[in-house]
Image (cartoon, rainbow, N blue to C red; front, side, top):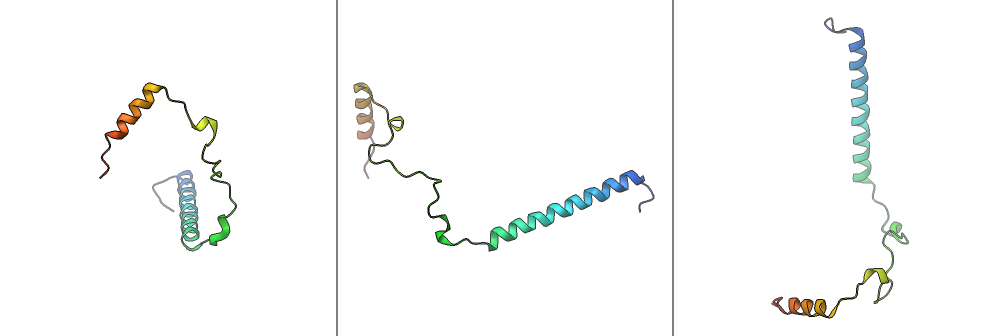
Length: 84
């Protein structure tokens, strides 16, 4: 094919070209599917990706008990926030 490169280099170049072509076709296929494939709105109902809330109290590991000094410091911090 090219007179200045060896047959092994020609084979490597052909493999590289085929791999690049396969990658481009695959990328185009992925982009085409993501652009034109719109699932039904009800398709995601019932998925448990986000767990349901456990109620107003929450899970014991989601809360901490503050000391009296921490409560007073937090109350002072809240008082410094301008209300508009």
